[in-house]
Amino acid sequence: HSFLRHISSLCEGLNFIFGGSFYFWICSVYLTLISERVVLRICFSLNTQTICPLVRQCKVRWQDFDQDLYVGATVVRPGQDPYARNKFNQVESDKLRMDRAVPDTRHDHCRHKQWKSELPASSVVITFHNEARSALLRTVVSVLKKSPPYLVKEIILVDDYSDNPEDGALLGKIEKVRVLRNDRREGLMRSRVRGADAATAPVLTFLDSHCECNDHWLEPLLERVAEDKTRVVSPIIDVINMDNFQYVGASADLKGGFDWNLVFKWDYMTLDQRRARQGNPIAPIKTPMIAGGLFVMDKEYFELLGKYDMMMDVWGGENLEISFRVWQCGGSLEIIPCSRVGHVFRKQHPYTFPGGSGTVNTRRAAEVWMDEYKNFYYAAVPSARNVPYGNRLEMKKRLSCKPFKWYLENVYPELRVPDHQDIAFGALQQGGNCLDTLGHFADGVVGVYECHNAGGNQVALLRQHTQVSLLNTYSEDTWVALTVRAQWVC
Ligand SMILES: [Mn+2]
Image 1: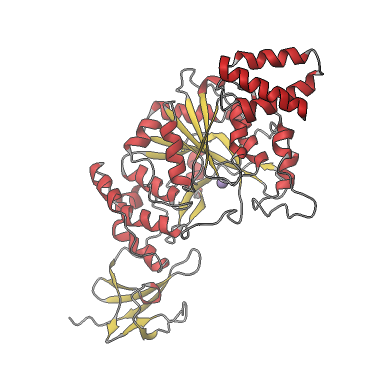
Image 2: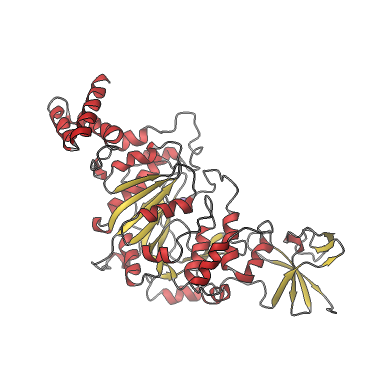
């Protein structure tokens, strides 16, 4: 230890005075004295902990990064729950090598395909908060290993105020990796915007912090964006099992969608859609919604379209918002089948939601983009009302974006709109009481209850001036309408 401290202070002092070359000189002198492996270890720990803040150019290839030292510092101790920190099995994740092989899950046609040689380089932006070191490292290494070097200009890690700043800082030693750390919790959207603002390449690639890129994942994505800057493209997202970390190929017949509760779901393509693709199974798939974390977008276009809603907190709803925005304001969303990236899907969020849940974000998306159709959402999620959203509406006007009706008709015709003749929403009120489903769904019994003005059981639809319906949807994906035939007298 005293030996280490001796070298450490010596290197630090010399570097401070003379710059980076002395560090390597010192190391090479000691190389003759001690075995190579020990020296590499010393260099590594010195470099990251004491020298890097002073000397910017001390970087290693990912192959030379000491995985054991980095991951070993945060292993799950005997008796601890391996799911406690990340809501996936960290023990299994920690066991894997940072560059473990994953199966090539692409369609056969992709293996023979040639990509354009002149593609724009990309900045890969990865935001994280208390991510398991092994998962974060594998994400970074898979980007470097599975991409042609000239297409990855840099990897920008945005540490959203993780408990341990070293989680990110130590990775800053790897070639091309830049680390930015927030000095308070900002959430996914502001963190991504910070990363995007710092990016120097013309194309942005956003990834989650628990991904593994597959063979030639980047070229097909960049090619689509290079051809048309208004395309926002994502890979097929393969599944990394959260319990055993097995890499499993996902179906290529899925699109992103949602129900009126505005929760993302995967839609299986219809028979016709699948038939139409048989001739060209690797053609891009237009998708109404992106899943969230993983997509590629031209940087200028990202800025033109208003980046992200900076008033959104933590997580959730942002994929909805950016999907509506891209489609309604003239762009398009695609899934590119020849690009595959694995992602650890979890059942629970590993972190807390300071200041409320993701519904605040969803409300903001609904208010700005869904016009009168937002009422279907409010009927489904009655608690979601009244959030400020001012500046986003101005942006929508400035970009002359299309109405939500256009989106429904042209982008997501599969989504069942409760009824084409539904023309107004409100409540049926007499004195202080409102007509209320009283929580009944199927039996057609309704009653009256004190008006609470929160929608839900008391949302009434006026249809064609002859019919009033009460709507309810607490079940995941079905609308239940209790229809009351009414004589409309006024
Ligand atoms: Mn994720």
